[in-house]
Length: 167
Image (tube, rainbow, N blue to C red; front, side, top):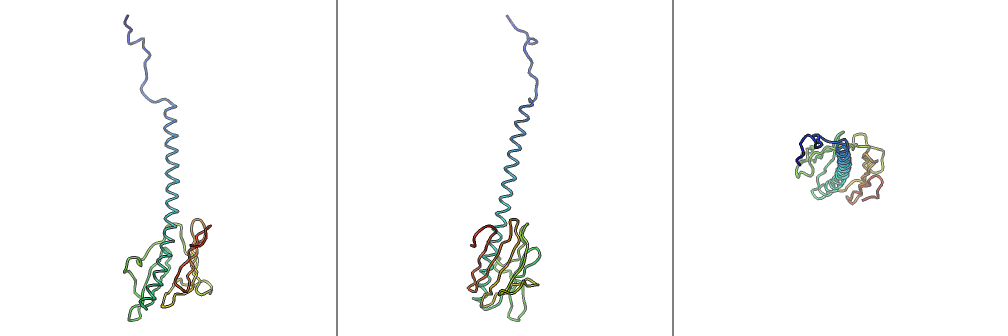
């Protein structure tokens, strides 16, 4: 006996409400994971920028000491740049090697102050390295608190990140 097509239940094209809800939940979980991942990368960028600045400060002290010519770092509102004293006693931008090129501060970072040799904060933040590295404390605001760079007479720079021990 043959059944006619009209007596079979017809399946309608489309998605059920449950299928749509499952897809929306999966998309929500993926969006949350992506957002958390990007926030963690942003925090890592900030930390990497602070560590890079620590190394460049140490390199500046070493270069000034070895070459016997002063090097200065100027703290701009949105970044920092280096200059060197040329033989004619004029300050010139230092761009070679590229480690001394002008750099912007990543989002969320801001200069808080520079203290030289235990004195009050310097009004025009500029740190100068000569044959003897200065003692200083540079404070930087980060999204998680205040970071501190402490420059020692040996040229070593100690970075203290918010909520962590010095490194």
